[in-house]
Image 1 (cartoon, rainbow, N blue to C red):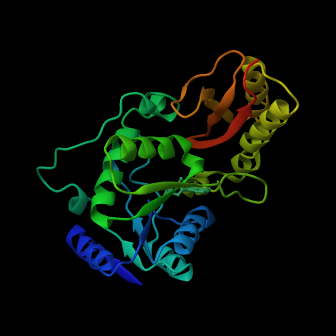
Image 2: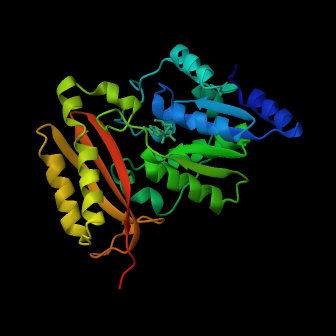
Length: 286
Ligand code: AMP
């Protein structure tokens, strides 16, 4: 497995692979890998001749008071894990390689970044879109795999690729969970044992909503109230948002929704903010 630290080396590698007729699958991450990340790499391994993983804690997607400096990092452990699932190259740039002096270009989307996580993290999705655009130009993949745990991110990146006619496919992969249903996240290590014990409230609430829809409930506010109630029953949980938005544009759900909707929640336990979501399929109206 190769580790490449400069954009020039990464681009030269990818150009040579493409000239050889090889397909390139790409998994962008911020590292501190867990099973959720590894599932994306396995998916890429299944589909592509060459698998590239990037590890880059992207400063431009963190707000001023967020956890950029204390975001967990362990490159040695990550590289062993990546090797174990057949990654061919880790692209591991330093911040100054990605944003050298004089850097001034960014990507912005009009609507998708303004809802859900974008409300409490106003700079986040612009930073995500910009770094993904850069990474796609550097790695030159035929496809990139994103986790649906970060569903809004998956939509933002997919929209950017479509809008800017980028020549790659975005593939979404299901959320990988701990045995008690908590979505795996590099940030779960921040939870105290008491908070960790309460964190499965998120999946419990989402599953309850899925059951309500399966049982024929159609009232948006009734479903949202039930979800809130389950989360709020945990003493340390503080809701950032619980929302139901229509896919794929994330516009407000009707009072009696029809079609596919994203039910998404963000919940603080202390300073740690956890997110999770599910797609609810309502029958068509009438
Ligand atoms: P991160 O390093 O947390 O920014 O995530 C890198 C990629 O891994 C993103 O596409 C995430 O959506 C994905 N990812 C993170 N956690 C999970 C999970 N539990 N299941 C599936 N994909 C995940």
